Image (cartoon, rainbow, N blue to C red; front, side):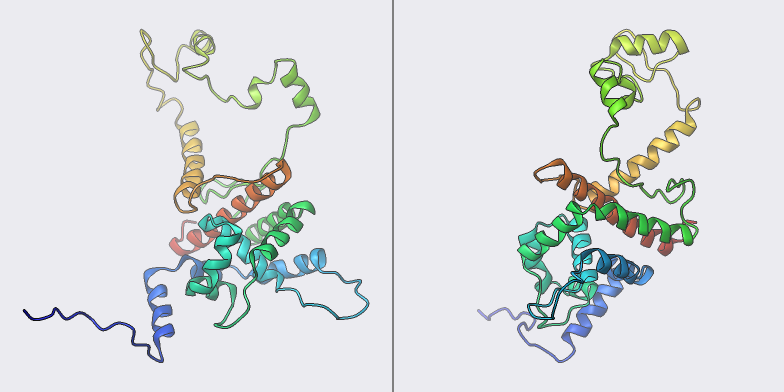
Length: 279
């Protein structure tokens, strides 16, 4: 019986990395495409002014990692759903990550503690919203955002609201805050609200026992369009960004991560808008 022959493996060539890079480009490297449509240097001045220690008496001590590169690592984490330990392991072994970060083979990669410390600075200093605002201004200059960050066709998301106001919390404690989170009746928990809606408007969004669902598609076409755009945003985050699970301690850290998720979505949505010429 003759031994089966297979394709040769383990033979390294001079142009292997170049060929791999070209193959990634040909198959549609989202990181490469995003780097082409947006210049991350627009964030450098702000990041350096906010995070660098300019009061040092001398240049002794370890030099910091490039802040724009560290910010890009935050984007990679949110887009691929990677923790600090995972991102430290993934960067050296993934050519697309290294190219996105501007690293060459042999360059030092930030460890998990450095990544954690950088994110802590962004969060504790409230810089995530400021960076988000910078991107929003950039999109406005490109003519992609109107009406204070709300856009119909491109479906960009706005900066996350951090918390309720004192007046809203007071209304909630008094039992009058339903409108803060309910935009429609819930068929399982609020049949009484559904009945009131039906009595007032002569129609219902839901159908349950002895109450057939009314066809509201034609009457609420605009509302359905709006909700569909919102669902597309969450669909992209769930599928392309590997879910929306936030694992952190304290509301401040969770708010910072949510802000980075929204920022990452806008960056990759911007690339998509340009690539397929939505507008």
